[in-house]
Length: 250
Image (cartoon, rainbow, N blue to C red; front, side, top):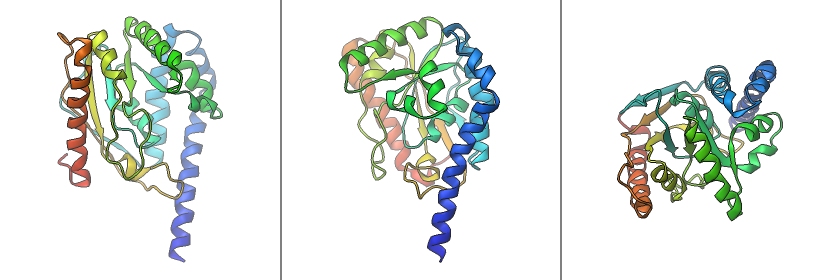
C-alpha cells in the first residue's frame, strides 16, 4: 500500500511540474511573444524567463535555490556558463544563478515539446549533435550573440548521463568557444537536481537546490590547443565537488 501511495505521489509531483512549466507561458504569452520578435529584445525575454517563469516552477515544486558564489559576474561581461546536467530543473536553476542574460545551446529535440518548444526554438541556439553542419552553425550563432553582449550556457556533457554516472565526459565545444572569444568560463555544481527531479517518471521529491558557482577560468593567453586541458581542469573541479554529494560543505 505504501509503495502505491509513493508512486502515486511521485506521478502527481511530475505532472505538477508540467503544469507549472505551462501556466506562466500561457499567462504571459503576449509579453513572451513580443520579446522574441527579434534578437534585440532578447534581454527582455530573459528577464521574463528569469523573474516570472523560473521562480514559479522552482518554488512551486518546493525546490528553492540555495546559491553560493565564489566569484561574481560583472553586469557588462560575457561568459561561458557550464554545469553538470542531470534534470529538467537545470534550465530553471541556471536562469536563477545568472543575472547576466545568456543564451542556451541545447539539443533540437526539445523544440518539439508543445508550448515550451515554441519559445525554446525562438530563443535558444539549437544543435543536432549528429550533424556536423549544425555544430558549425552553433559557433556562428554564438559568435553573433556574444558580440551583442550576451553570455552562452552549455552543458558540456552533451546530454544527460545515466543516473548512476556522477559526471560524464565533457565535450570540447564550450571550451573552444570560450578560448576563441576570450571569455571567462564559469563552472557550476548543481548538487541536488538529480535527487529532486531526475528524468525517471516515478521519482523526485521537494527540497532545496544547492548550487556552487566556482572560481572563474580566465582564457586570456589560451590558444585552441589548450581547450583539452581547460576542459579537464573544469571537469575535475565539478567532479570533485559532486563526489562530496549530500555531505558537501555549503
